[in-house]
Image 1 (cartoon, one colour):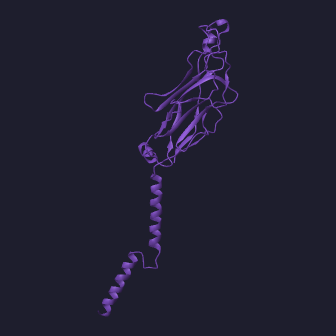
Image 2 (tube, one colour):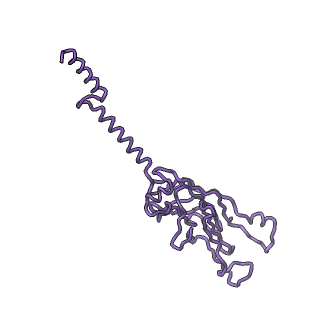
Image 3 (tube, one colour):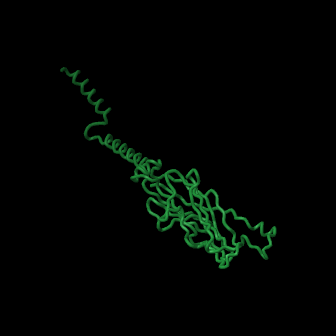
Length: 244
């Protein structure tokens, strides 16, 4: 090999090494690889299925759904509480759930728990037809509507001899949980949830029974009595439900 051929070969080898990121002492290629690996891991974590739920209470002081201490990492139990300084004889609301969660049932198979604030049995011992008795059915119901996306719940005092109740204690409990599956991964895959997803949860309709509803002075059905014998629209704040 003459000297010109050696010169050409040396130049070619140098160009090849430069194109490949340098020789053994050049760390730029390793740094690029490490950055790529880190990005790939971040992408995998972003797309990872969620297996738990967290709930942050709303910040308001009115009607709201707040997390109960009995909640777990896959099941959030929510207490309905009302504003301070207000009393009522009952409340009803429709809760719409987002993707990936189901409405949970409790030990008795029901979709809600009566916490005992409202007095649902009648107090009349004489069984007059116009007054509530202990034998009357109670007005406490909770069931998903036909689509399964909305849970309708209501609890009401019928007997006006019972006083209206303070609303700052939990009035009723409902629950949302990860969709049913054999494993956490199956639950989340079926639901399409990924870590960090915010799950929509909203009360779409709510009404309360005013403290003075149904009052009949001297049993006279006056226009004033009729006007106040209606449930009142309310707004119920819902917190932030996140898949993790």
